[in-house]
Image (tube, one colour):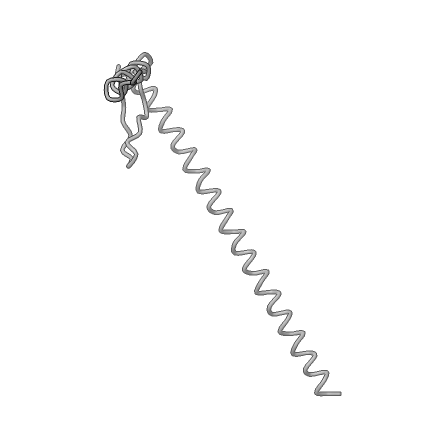
Amino acid sequence: MDSLAAETKAITAELTKRAKEQQLQQYREAIQQKAVAEQQRLDKETLDEINAYLKQYGKEKGYDFILGATEQGNIVYAAEGKDITEEVLTGLNQQYDRQHPTHP
């Protein structure tokens, strides 16, 4: 009986160890997720503050555009009335019509 009790105790200890390791891993993952979420929140908050300042700065200084120093080359400020979307779409449609004439 002593060997059976010792084996049962060893198995129980191993299962307890595995359960604790699994709990620790889950805890680490949860902490990592919280850290990532907090970093994203702080990044957004910082960018929102920067963008608000750049908008105010652009208006005060009379700039038409302020470009962001990002890989995407984002426009971080554009004066109202500078939307050329319709003009560009018209030009693109005219170019397309010239390059792809319809055949009756």
